[in-house]
Length: 356
Image (cartoon, rainbow, N blue to C red):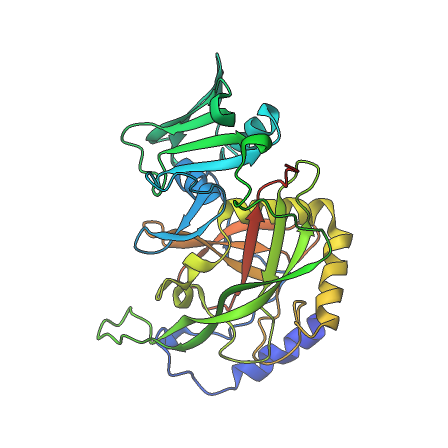
């Protein structure tokens, strides 16, 4: 990606003499841009929340605990909406999908007929369990995931992996092709005055507010050959003050809940690291379409390629970002009251396409 330190220094000098903003945190406010070569604002990740990872691998929740969007699973039985089903070609595919729902620093224990997975948080505190078991093939069910008692996973209690031969014809099993763009209804986030004002000095005046739009997503990985489809939408690095927000502005109106989840971001990061040249080609394609997905120079651009994720730790006062400022890329925590502006990314994962 383009990096021009000379322009950045000029920009910082310009921002230093600009008028003070009327937003809160103004006493210590600094320019929203920062040097993309510096990671001084970032905190290294030392662990993962197993429950959060598993939840977001299946159903991403909104601030009230209701589905924001489904990643995996369809409700084939209208009499019980807590049972989800996933179309697979065979038991091996079912097993691979389940293991992708296990957080990076966690392990699912191999047992007779499947796996037992004890969920734990960042510090290893138990959070419940899930079990993957091979099935007898009755009604096309090849394997089943069941949620253990006292496990706070929402919107599902059971997931059935169903063979393509038994999959209903009217259910979704769409093919996505790498290199193509798709229009998906989502929200453009815009920085504006918070709808609800407060006398609390720690409550910001501004927030990132959702505006429904048809957005263009680029398919970086198609879902043939047993792979998931990965589609991405990057917020443009526009030279506009209302286009980008600080972490607390994403959090204050729960806009962060709509951003890419940690499992989705990890999949994007893996692709980015392995196929950097193809990622760069995608950026060029979208730039030619006028989408401004690359880093751009301007007083009110972010000057970086760092994207807010939906993983917010209220107790620690941090939120995760995906940093794509260099070829390696990484996921880090940043302080929720960081003075810097960040972009956002949407990711849509679709199950492997199975020819019926």
